[in-house]
Length: 151
Image (cartoon, rainbow, N blue to C red; front, top):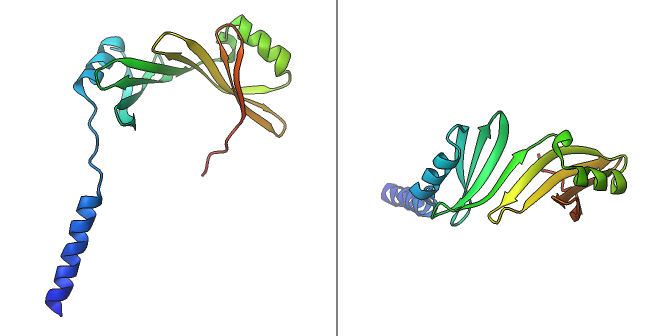
């Protein structure tokens, strides 16, 4: 009976060890490209966005920022926080017209690999909570109900 219990315990350990996903390492090319583009970055933390895409979160000039790289070191996207006062006038005009009375929060600027800029933010007015995004010319790109984060 003792041998059977020992065998069962060993089998459980073996099963769990095979069930663990190996941690995907960030490729050296992505790290080198990041270091070259952001040499003054602080509080750097790497993670895997999805297979083949590596996200690095960091602080640049006291602003929380993130960048997304592929395995070859190609920059796919950057995102960073910004203040409402820094929004382009065209975006401010659209907000004033279409979102009068909304309070803006968590404003971010995002730049994709082609250089296209979008501005993403939360817009809250009473019980209406939206996630909205605009292009650099103030055109509304998306308006969706804000998904509540699970605690």
